[in-house]
Length: 137
Image (cartoon, rainbow, N blue to C red; front, top):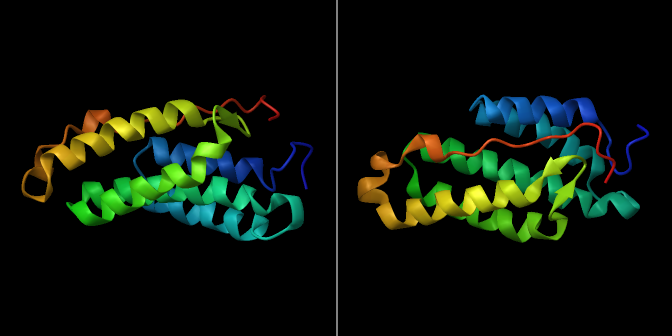
């Protein structure tokens, strides 16, 4: 265990976020899924599993978006809000507020375009995750 409260592996979190920000959404999913398994159901850290699962769902949602899967993108991105909302504004140095605001804008645009026009989605709208490794929250 590290000295960062609630963090099982801050290096893995940083790696997963770097993968997300490089649009390597599948890799991000895989990296953070390992951390999610480590924290899942462990006493006080049980809710921390929701934090990791929320980021995983956003990564998977954007993975589906880039592959033209409207339904997968909408379902995964939508469910991430339920999981991550309790962690606003930040948790473990991750700017959850910014991530959810930007993801919400993307989700709105995906819904507006619908499956027929999903290819018109402006990929520059895909957010980056802001991480402050010095934060201890």
